[in-house]
Image (cartoon, rainbow, N blue to C red; front, side, top):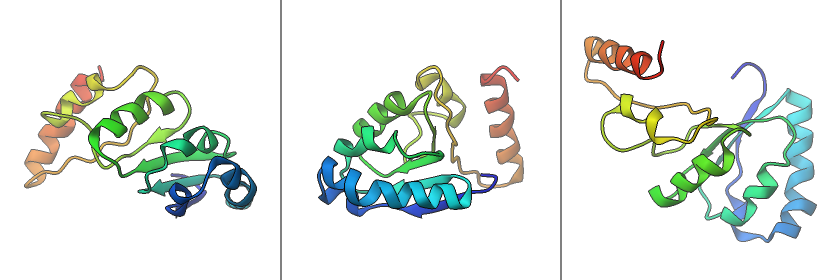
Length: 132
């Protein structure tokens, strides 16, 4: 991410939406403004804060660590709003993952490879799947 600051915001799962707006959002907005954008990790059970996350000015990247079903919902909810990089990316081979995501979703995928040659094969298959 060019510019900006990446942080962890895990406590928001333990507070309500009004408290998020009063206590967390002003600081998140200030940090984003000061550093030119924000990447945010959240592993809390914070589904109730997702609308609030969308109001963070300059939110550039969102990383959630949640069960697969919640992440499937998140990919759709945040598609078209913010780039996503969650703990789970999809089922099957890595190059099939983009087809499993909603249109308009911008996603950073994390795939592993045993060696350089395998990494290049995976990257080539990704490029083909994305029409590049």
